Amino acid sequence: MGDLFTEYEKDFGVLSADIVSKTNKIPNLHGVPKRTLIDDVEQKFDELQELLEQMDLEVRGLPGDRKNASSSRLKSYKDESKTLEQNFKKSKISMTDLEHARTELLAGEDGGQSEDQRSRLLENTERVERSNRRLEEGYRVCIETEELGEEILTNLSRDRENMTRTRDRLRNTNNDLSSSSRILTGMMRRVIQNRMLMCLAILMVLVVICVVIYYASQK
Image (tube, rainbow, N blue to C red; front, side, top):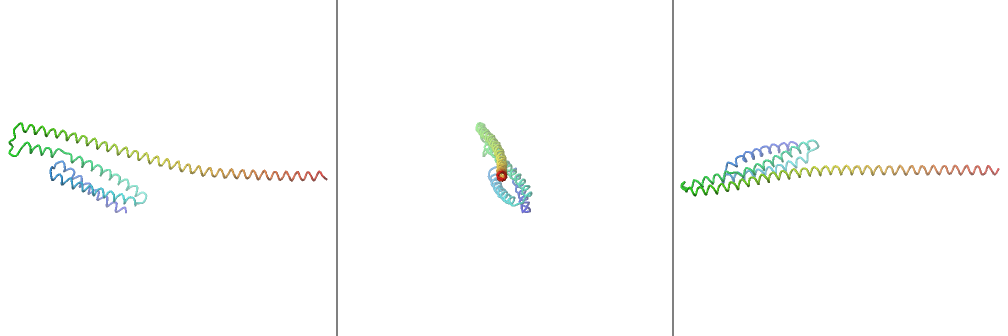
């Protein structure tokens, strides 16, 4: 099983390197080539997610220490996958298409637009660029909010695990106390029984003494 997990790790390295390489090319493209490359990277992410699921299943079947070590590595691969996805999302938001469109508009078919037309086109393009920058800022805030939410969920999960362990310890302590209580109750019962037997024995001795004294006094 461990060998299969190692093979999965090698496949993950190849896939992630391919995604990084293609993601870095996206901001420099526009139009159909850009869309084609984006579709290709999205397909690679589907393969990466399927690979992570296979790794997760493999880790569950590993024994003891190997399972703990592989689980730790799997978590780092999942974190790396999230980072790759964030970088991919950012790479799709670029100024390349806008700059390309602005160049085509300003140039025109014969390069014969008037200065007034060029000024209006430039103004409209700048307005679009400002809107795009606001979208980028909004996206950045969303990413930061998502990261904060993940951190909060992680902390809550950790707190829940601590509370579960504490509850389990209290339950074990309660079970131990119950066992101790049953033992003490049994001991007390035996002490009481012993005392009753002792009292009964003393009473019988007293009765015998009284009978002996009675018959002795009759003689």
